[in-house]
Image (tube, helix red, strand yellow):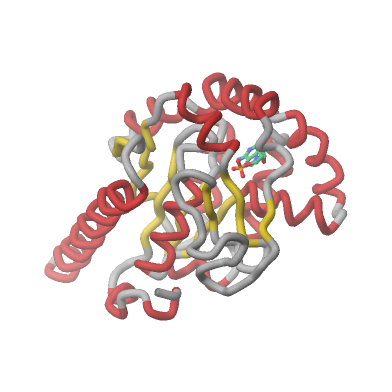
Length: 245
Ligand code: AMP
């Protein structure tokens, strides 16, 4: 299903903003793409935005490159700037799934400021719960279609025909340079030191949801879809109540 086949009723509610939290390899990107197609939301991946900046050789990209290669976190200033530029684009008014942002409490505070200036507000932060021990295996097997970005895995999700993308027929598959065991270990460290505290942060704001992300892709995506459907119902009720007042 393409984004244009998403549920046509989606635009009769206020736009939804979801944050996906979880260590590298938890499946944030895969699940964000599924939700994007199912609900017409826009996937905002700061990792993708930064990789594009590196490929384009922009000033932000030049500064981010070595940090990304080492598995560290790019400075808050750079990430907030690429994210705010993207979120200001008109398509984001449909609602967004933040994949890989925020990753620090400073970014979480800035996100609140950025959203205050738009019509968007965070409906839920969803923590994808996984065991670290599984993450290196998951990450080392993953690859994407270089044409459309569809994600695959050597064990969990092979294309129907080896080397050919199920979705667009592209034949250029690529693996990320930072998906090697040493860099993954650093990325996991950065997650636990700087990002995991956001679970408590969003719990305090009473918008945290958790999903067991150790099962298969379809089970996880069903659990996430249930959350989105409930949020959409809540938002509709909220609008109804405001109209009655
Ligand atoms: P990802 O694609 O989300 O795994 O991100 C790949 C890399 O981009 C990370 O290891 C970081 O170096 C950098 N990055 C992505 N998002 C952020 C963020 N919100 N804050 C800091 N660095 C980030």
